[in-house]
Length: 411
Image 1 (tube, one colour):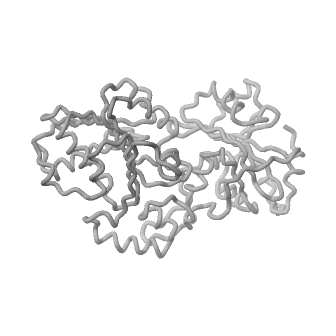
Image 2 (cartoon, one colour):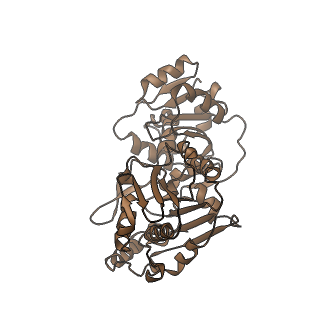
Image 3 (tube, one colour):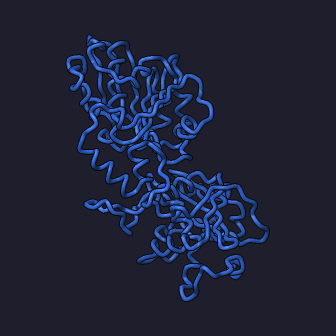
């Protein structure tokens, strides 16, 4: 069997070979953290019989998994004689250890039936949804079982960031380590110039990509310096606006409730869920968005059949009139408010405001005016909710009394 002492282990890896319920490895690009975790799991599988589930939130095929990375590390560590590699699994023929690969988003309930798991490795865990984590923890329940996490943090509201990084006190039996490019003895020299350019061009983005910090204060962020998270009291009598973006496949259905006061846009409630069936949508929206029944909700016009169905169920719902430039116009309209205030309960809204970004030019790295079509489902629903106001372009909407205007509309 492979002699572990002949393989050079980085100092941060040493604790991976000791028992801890949670092992949280986070940091920026070029750190080698995924390579280090793969190496440690392979060596442990040579030492004892293990069953390792390698998962990530979204995995459409084995190509999306760490299967190829583990295969590469088997070759690099000269362990090929001990492993049998199949299309979907990797077996250690000496100890009986096995690596399996699954996407968590659509398989989380099926994982409950996988018995004997000793290790779970969640890669790209910054994308992990709260529901997946809630199911995962009690599912991995064998004595001495461990959950390993690798991630480059993006949002402070992500479930794992709040539980393991932003926490005042770590959960018991947790090993947490931040691993950046400085910890990688094999860091490619060619990337040094890229880091320097990123740092000079957009320091906020540099800190996220290379230093493993959350994505904040980047010039690429569409709503940079325009919003805050706060608790607030809703004034009596304000007009509420409701918007809805229907989900497709992996995209969530996203509903929003907001109002305007003193030229500030207040986001009070959100309703966000993946895999929401149309016959359950109205019940879910009513549960999450107070006062919905006494107002009209404005929805994406790409789903007329869904709008028709919800009308038959008694909901007041109308399709927006999207057209060329409507996304850009909507963004500029939202940015025209003096401030956007997001209630702290609206965690998905906060994530989107952190992540919604402009594209970078592939050659120069300069930030363009083109918008990345991602991290925008709640934001789309905000645009829809305010579409009535945006239509009157002959008026400077920054001077409108939005509360008074809202009362002109029949609900």
